[in-house]
Amino acid sequence: MKLRIAPSPTGYLHIGNARTALFNWLYARANNGKFLVRIDDTDTARSSEEYMQDIVKNFKWLGIDWDEGVEVGGPHGEYKQSLRFDRYREIAESLLEKNLAYEDDGAIRFKVPNEKEITFQDITRGSMKFNLNDIEDFIILRSDKSPTYHLASTIDDIDYEITTIARGEDILSSTPKHILLMQALDADIPTFCHLPLLFGPDGKKLSKRHGDTSVNTFKDKGLLPDALFNYMCLLGWAPGDDIEIFNRDFAISKFDLNNVLPNPAIFDTTKLLWMNGQYIRNIEANSFTAMAIDKISHNIQRELFDNEKERLNKILPSVQERLETLNDLKPQIDFLLDEPFVMNQEDWDSVNSEEGQEYLMAVREKFKNLEEFTVETIETLMRDELKTIGVKPKIGFQIVRVSITGTKISPPLFESIFALGKNGVLARLAETIEKL
RNA sequence: GGCCCCGUCGUCCAGAGGCCUAGGACGCUGGGUUUUCAACCCAGAAACGCCGGUUCGAAUCCGGUCGGGGCUGCCA
Image 1: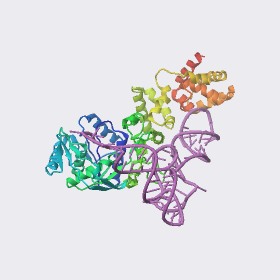
Image 2: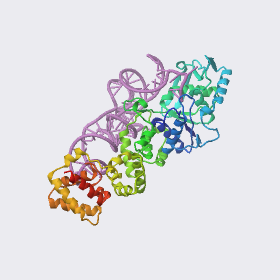
Image 3: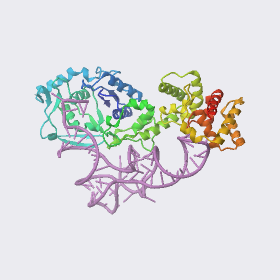
Image 4: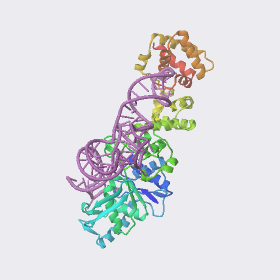
């Protein structure tokens, strides 16, 4: 069994193609088959090396590997159609000679036989039947002698011995053309499987109209490849037993194209975000720290100082469970960076009160004399002082929170104070109190 | 317009004639926990598009209808 994905490098890898690649990959891996990546760049005007690199890079990022094709090589050369134009021309010529095609204004058209129908079995859709009267003679070689997708793709599928073609449903109507070509070339007809399309929230084929749906943007938004992979699996398929969170090996062990739904799925990022949060929480602490520091550094566009890293190491475990994406990190740890401290005025106004101020000043004095500065001693001190002054936790803690972090929403208070450090806390409290 | 595909909660899935007074998840609503935000726990609202047929029995099979989508390029 051999499957393939054949992206055309006319744009960055988008989620629709990634999903198609994923299903092909899963089916190949589930059946000990081969998976191949070839580049369908017959549209030389719109194709570019940059896009090709992006596609390859993102397949890898998602954990999709291949046994044959671009980069990894194989018995069929470079797996780029732009390098095989001679081969396609040759075939087009031979079809011309056999009178199965004809010239038309310099282009070559394939002659679609009359009064015949094409039937085939589609894995997800069952019996398909197309009346050839509905299909016009189609161009296989353009007047500039470059092949069209129909020709090049079909020849490649034959030459590379593809046994199962799983692609988007948008190509379902073109399949009879490809079968016709295969028949004309005396080739075996592979098994076809037309996967349901991915729709945008408006119920239309996912495209640029729905904003940037490239894999890159999801990466930039702080999504984890494992989470994206997992989520994409669920678009048109489920492993059964109501299991929704699973890894690649599990997906492979359960995957079957026969169980893929025929109806389209709307790509809705809400659940993806939730799932990403689940994955983030499951990351081992040390890996998370490394990942987080890397991301923050990327977000603020500079290396982090050692003392910043020290502070972050203290708070990161508390932040880890409060994220949906890695991009949610920075706002939560801003107050620990060596950057100008910004206080949200609105937040301050809403927590500011007379008894709050009294508590704030009292706590500051107590902190000055706190020798052992740990989460536990901080908590004890602050709770004791609550009683001494006689204010409610909400009043006392929230005014301290805003004084320390600048906002009403922050990581847990005692951990935040501990991470900032005694000197930092005293400085920040002093700053706030001076402005009163 | 023509050809083709599709149709279960708002969304993603389960359901392959009786186990369905339709199940799970996200989201949503209410409650609990609580120093904020999350997380977590509990509860709840929410769907088989419609009409026929087959059958003792249909979300599941068939037909029609309506609705949505794709293709209809010397793009892929």
